[in-house]
Image 1 (cartoon, rainbow, N blue to C red):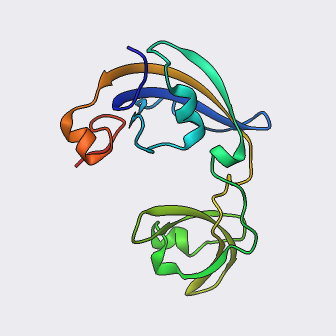
Image 2: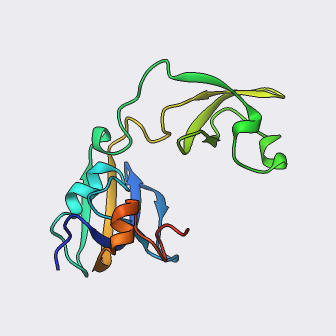
Length: 163
């Protein structure tokens, strides 16, 4: 069964930039997503189309199809209370740190530019924006999505969304 729209895909990955590994799913449950619903960044999703369980490959993804191009001047002052994390972590914010901002739409990552007692100035570009990335991918398992998954627009269960 090749990967196509409405396929639940379970996979492991290693993400790197300029030969440096940035993150990996190995040692954890595989990531699960519903193909064709924008649940992962577009570059790797496009490359997965037609792959099958057991396939192992490397996807070189240009910045525009990864986390996008950098938008200059994308800075914002945000109350610290809108950042995810415990109070001890938030009390130690320093320039260059990556933080997660809780928004009405979803959580998003940003980079600290300046931290104050009550507010933080952040670069709202994703920390990997503007970077070409390499994904080493291993397709672990595939299955057809359930009607619930299709109507919800995401995979359920291990590695996916839990209600």
